[in-house]
Image 1: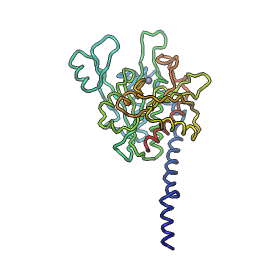
Image 2: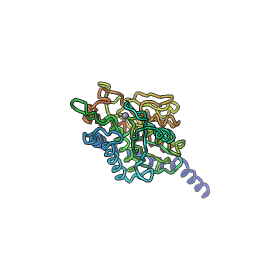
Image 3: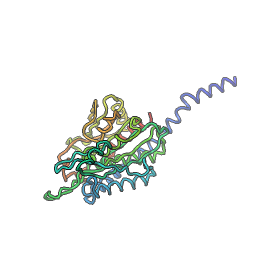
Image 4: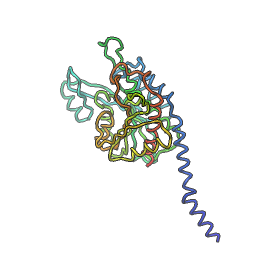
Length: 336
Ligand SMILES: [Zn+2]
C-alpha cells in the first residue's frame, strides 16, 4: 500500500501537478519583463537620440558616437555585459576613391583589395551586449541600426536629418527589450545578443561586418530587426504595422497572432511572409547567411529620409506595443 502511495506521489510530481510550477514561474518572469516596457521610455530614448544635438547620427561622425555612448550607458545600467572585450565592435569600411555615392566594403578580403589602391576609409563601431543563456552554442540576435543620414548644410531651413522614426524608434525597442530580459531575472535557454548597428544607411555596413566575421553565425537561430516602428501612415488605423518574416518559419506569424490575443496587444499587423528577406534593412545581412529573420516596421511616410522625421511625430504607445510584441517573440525564440 505504501509503495502505491509513493508511486502515485512520484507520478503526480513528474506529470501535471509538478510540471506546472516551472511553467508558472517562467510566465511570472516573462510578465515581470513585459511590465517594464513603457511608452514613456520609448519617448525618452527617441527624444535624446533624435535631438538636434546628435546632428542626425551620421556614421563615423560625432553624433553617432554620442548615440553609441548613450546606448553603452544603458547597457551598463542594466548590468548587461559586453559581447566582446568591450561594448564596441570597431571595424573599417573602405571604398574606392569617388566623388559620387561610395560603395563601401567591410568584408576583410575586399577591404584588403580596395586598400591596395586609392581609397577612402570610414572607422565605425557596432555596439553589442549579451545576456548569456543556458546554452552558449545557440544564439538569438536582436538589433537595430543606430546611425542616420546626418546633415545637409546646403538645405534652406532645417538641415538636420533627425531620424526619429529611422531609426531612433528601433533603437528604443532594442534597449527596452534588453532591459525587460535583464529585469525579468530569467536565464534564457539560448544566448541573447543585443546589437546596435553602425553604418546601415551607407549599405548595412555594421550588420554585414558582424555576419561576415561572426565565428558562430551558423549557430544564430534567429534575428529580430527593427527599422522604423513609430509612425501612423494609415489614417484612422493607428494600430497598423508591417510584420515581415522568413516564410519558411510560419510559426513566427502564429506567435504574433497568439500574443496579440493573449496579451490584448493593440496591433493590426500586415503579415508578410517573405521567401528570402534580403531587402530593406539589416535583416538582409542575416537572411543571406540563412538565419531566420523577423522585421518590425510601420511602413514609409512623407517624412522618410527628410529633416521632418522628428520625435514629436512618433506614436509612442504604438512603438511600445510593438516592443512588447517583439519581446514576447524574442522570449519564444530564446526558449525553444
Ligand atoms: Zn533605417
